[in-house]
Each structure stands twice: as C-alpha cells, then as structure tokens.
Image (cartoon, rainbow, N blue to C red; front, side, top):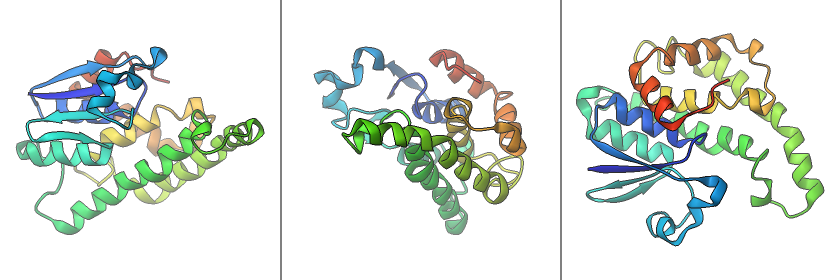
Length: 209
C-alpha cells in the first residue's frame, strides 16, 4: 500500500487529492511542522530533504510534487488524470506543474522561508514585502495565458488541477487581490465541488480562504 507523508497547509494536498481521484489504496501520514516533525530522525530516514510530500511505494520513495502527481496518473491510468498517450500534451502538463513547483511555490516561500536563501534580517523582510507582487505576477499569467478552460488543460480534469488548487488556497495569505483573478477563483470553487477534494481537504483540516 502507498503511504503519503503530508502536513496541513502544504503542497502535499495536491498529491492527497490525486490519490483520492485515482481511488488508490493509501495511508496518509500526518507530520506536525509546529513541532518540527519533518526534522525527526524517523522522517529524515524517509525523506532526507525534511520536506513534504513524500510517497512510499513498493519500488521506493518518491519526493517532489510534480513527480508524485505523474506517478499517480501513470499508476492508475483508468482514472484518466493525464493525457498519457499524447507526448506533447503530457509535456504541456509537466510544463505547467513545473512552473508551479519551480516558480510559483518559490515566490510563496520567500514570504515564509526567506532564511533558506539569506541570513540578513533586513533581506528576509524585503523578501516578505515582495511576495504580494511576485505572486500576483505569477497568477496573472496563469489567469491570462495558462488556464485553458474550466480545467487547466481545457475541458479535461488532470493532475494540474489539484496542484493549482492547492497553491491557490495560499493567495489571500500572500496578500494577492483575488478579485483580479476571476477565472482562478472560479477554478478553486469548482474544485471544491469534487468529492475527492472535499475528502482530502477535510482529512487534512486545510484552512480555506
């Protein structure tokens, strides 16, 4: 059985939702960041990065959300969570999820994890002040160019959607004016009607805006 390590309010929610969408058999393992649960020797033996998510499989342990999402899609093809037979569309899916991982999530982290990059207290505060602008810039691009329809890829729900939803729940906390992002907000609301999303959100106790 798969085992997903997560912490509430993190990007692990995207994989949690995908596992529910795939009707996968899995065990959800909650970590408490408030008590540094991700830094315990037990968890570091699972993921030396000390971060979530981590997914324990029969073949080994996977980390990083884009990798976990495509693993779920390929492991449960009947759920049709990715265009697996179309190389170009699959690359587009990976392109979107890579943008969320490498650019959008990093912009968000500058507001909460600035000490990953700098030690100077003034620089940390400057990074925090920049977050509303950088997150707004990222999401304006998603709003205008990257959200193709009711779902990220158009008419078809894919593993891009739980990932976008997860990060979109952070927008208000990052000081972003969501009134300027009607399509993103509609996507977030549309996601909340899906049983898999409701179940994962309830299990994690995710605080929604």
